[in-house]
Length: 238
Image 1 (cartoon, rainbow, N blue to C red):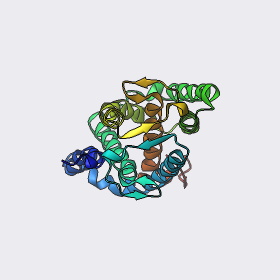
Image 2: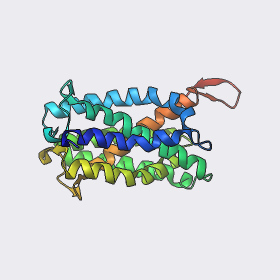
Image 3: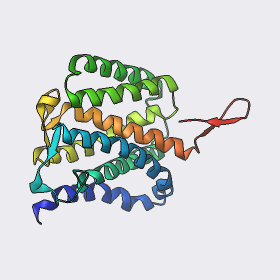
Image 4: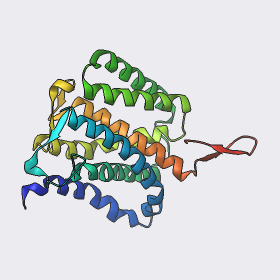
């Protein structure tokens, strides 16, 4: 295979099994697709703008040896697909876990975890505010986890379980992208700390991206409404 299709192949393999298994008669993930794509569009738009700025400011770039050379707004088409394939696969993991694990095992600790992540993000912002990737990643994560702490959505514990499980494919996909390497990082714009070949911030970048997608997914699945104690229906993000 031509190595210029490497990133495209990684995208394809990321989403292949979630799509194929979407029609499993137990989980029936395909029935949830219509609730996924609005969130993919909204979250993807945020991250693509961020991505575009990062390319312009030399936070990261792409190895031309491993991409097809098709660009849109200076971003490889494979990078655009990344914000569809990876969140789709992660939401598939989330839904499978919801089906097979009936008990919300992290329900009682979800709020303390959210608060801890918000405080960690705030600390990272103070220490690494001059590093663009660190600033953007922990800034967004601070907002999202603080919201999670304050809003107390009922699915927070299940989200954290899904994120922990999603770290398995995360290490495979990001490990490939950073070790080949397909994505080239400017370590002057991040903490300079890596887990294997993966920048430390990537773990929290993934957390923020998945969390935003899950928030939108649950919002659209629940019709953007909740039932109050008095029986009235009011807008809700959870």
